[in-house]
Each structure stands twice: as C-alpha cells, then as structure tokens.
Length: 140
Image: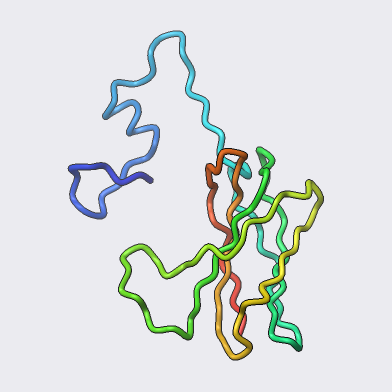
C-alpha cells in the first residue's frame, strides 16, 4: 500500500490502483515491469544468538524471486529511550554482499553485552533499491 500526497493521513492505495485509477493506466503496447530486490518475499532471519563475548550472530536466507546482490542489516536498541522519531529507531548497522549460497551470516561485535536489540534484514540490488524487511529477531 502506498501513501498518496494530498490524501488524508493514513489513507493508502495499492500500486495497481495508483497506476490505473490515479495516473491514467499504462499506454497501449507498453507493460509495467517491477523488480523487487530479493523477490516478492523478504529475507528470512532464521537465528539471532549472543555468544559469551556479547557479540550477536545473525543468520538468514534470501526470499524467493529475484536474487539480491546484498543485504542491509538494521538494529533497534530496545534498551534506549525512544527518540520520538516518526519513522522508527532502526539503525543501519551493516551491509553484506550476497554469497549466492543458502544461508548468510553476519556478526554484530558492537552490541553491548547487557543490551536488548531487535534486528531485521532487507535485500538490496546493485543500485541500492531495497526490498521488504524480514520479520524481526530479538536478542537480550
């Protein structure tokens, strides 16, 4: 669902509705082609584990569809007071090139040993178009 400028806050429409109802559709003889990095599904964050040193190891696999060239890793510090930001308190903490293999891993060595964090991963293509975020994984 997409927010539409000039519409009341919180009101959204589908991409199909935006194109056909609000923009006049697609010209005859042309087709719409959209490529979502990582395909139509988000990466699957399969594990988030803290080791004895306090570092957090994340493991994920790519979603189905168009292969991603890389991944972006986001972290929310759940022990910090809310910043009041309207979007989120998620911070981009790393980018990782796709190995093309099944599972990918990344280690967060900056995580405070007593901290509580939520992580999610997005797929990105070579020009940094970003796909849908994975479901979050929490580590305490």
